[in-house]
Image (cartoon, rainbow over all chains, first blue to last red; front, side):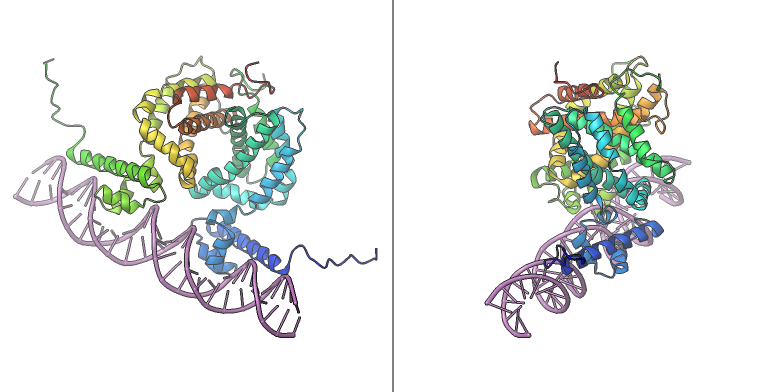
Length: 213
Length: 213
DNA sequence: TGACTAATGTCAGTCACTGACATAAGGTTG
DNA sequence: CAACCTTATGTCAGTGACTGACATTAGTCA
């Protein structure tokens, strides 16, 4: 071992793939900038491509839809969510699994705060973004939760409705928290809002009683 | 009171509006036929318009999107849902309100069985239909349920998460039931599936226990 | 009947997205 | 290093959902 870091003769990321992900990043940033300043519907995919100095065709090679430019970091987050769900001990109750797994995403949420706020804002403003969020992003989250809970509870999610029902309730809680957070312009503590809303999930089997009683 | 039904001198529905809703119906039927035989993505809005013998422009005056042609009867169903929710007694627990209100839609489901089966099938096959169902149709249901529960529980749904969480869980249950029903090719009893799945909602606050224990 | 209104047709346009083909830059192997 | 393969990108022509503007026709009503 010498003092210099060993030079990897086979770099994991080749120059080519580095360039590729740089293009992707530039597209995402160009999109974010234009969406934030002009609005979502008011920005065309051509505008984004030109600002990133690539052709429109290249944009659609990196992202399947215009909405995906805005939510380009979701794959990464979904992977983190999957790992966090996987890491929960078998002794934990299903609701606690979801709650604790989501809570462990706090780091990611902090790192991408601006992006998340932009996503939340645009989803609250533009129906097309809201639709994409529900039908694609949230569906992805839900699927991870269902799969994890089905394993955790050792049931077939096509037969036993509970994993999907818990997942649906949890996604509602996350939506509420996100709306409140966006509404507060990011001033409130996103994680605290999520945890509070998720805690309301545990109460829904009970008779309607005043909260806190 | 004579034996003949009285002839209304001022018909509620003028010839003009009758023609209009006839055009709408013809468009919906043309769409259903083409979607069922050819597939959703494989049918263009022009195909539908031509089969209904109107211009494409007229189609888009009756329906905002291609997907809306498939779900054209949802406004009617939403109204029924709202009324059914409204009709529930104040003494009923929130989950029972949803369950009983949905159950009272059985008539409607029976009347439009074929249409519902087509919708379910296409939503299971085509991502664009699935996305529309989630982001538009189910969102409409969810909003009605949230509003009704908020009134029923006398809480502000922007503050208290429970109405939305219960609504989200209920929509998950309805989705599961619809998937099972579609999977059985309409052989199983749709209402029974829905009620069974909704009953699973009541269990989610409890510790994970084997079903039936 | 004549004026008003609402439903439809026509047409040109926008914009998201795709397939096909060409080019060039990156990487590999003798 | 030279020939060769691979892959990211550009170009271009197309499709299809949806829209605005304007003309036309059919229904309504005084």
